[in-house]
Length: 404
Image 1 (cartoon, rainbow, N blue to C red):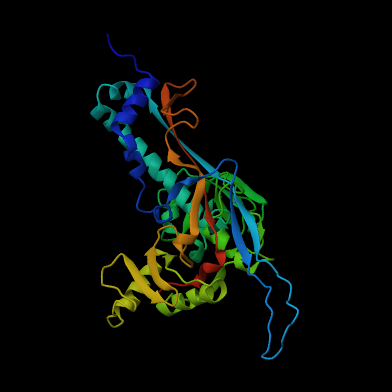
Image 2 (image 1 turned 45 degrees about the horizontal axis):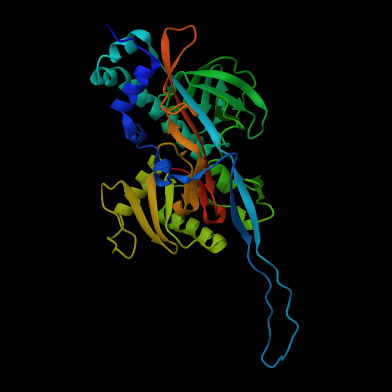
């Protein structure tokens, strides 16, 4: 008798064919997710809380020689507060029709052939969205420069081609600047010209003006805070007010509407050293063209010893030595052209309930679901995680970069 195709059959094939391999399908563009590991010990229930030091002990008494017995000043304790982080959820769906599923059940090889493209594309798409959220969560993926009918032109410095590559059929929402006022929601991307920085959409575009901010559909107010938001925050974030505590606020360094150089990176790092006491290795994430400029600049310099800056022609990573320690400059396809983010990876955490996983939450081993009223099974890829920086004052954002 022929085997009946069921979700249990497909679940078993999935586990036998892919096992834990699926967790290693993160694309190379998931740079932050590879730099900052998700730790099982930092899974959260309702929220993740960690005490952070916001001011130092201040109960000092100064005495000159010969003062004798003096009344000591009162102790003034350091300020510690609990920062609270909630997990932001993302869910991706993909479907496999019954006919393909029936063919897939005949062998492990047939199952891999039928599902490999779907599974890899789901994982790649999901980790891309998560990576973009870790960069620009709560600040938007692009800024509108102008609008002509259904064609939105994006601001040069606020565009990252990697975000928009392959974005056809993506749905976006447009908000008034950085406010919570919706200009237009549910616009469908029909085509993108990366060279001209234009996005053609279907849907009503009335009211969209220069300076408006673009978000993924439904992301506004629901995605986690990214590096951009955390470093430039000047108000309350994670339950702590940066306007009250200087150590909860990162630094911003302007590149002067010119190309980024090694000197400017060192100057930016110096701000974090002076303000936040940065004394550890950092990573600087830059736009690919910025990296090329730095690469050319570095190639024109003399050879450095291991105790100074070092680089070789054709390298994937540029490394400088600063007053803090090592500075690793990494090209990131999702970083906007005018920006650079500098942070110490040891101070960054990925916290939440789970990384992307095909298992149905609360029902271990269940991957495939029946789609109601459709002759198909469905895979769902789910994650609940957020980015958290325990020492924002040790981080710097460089803006106003104009690449040559």
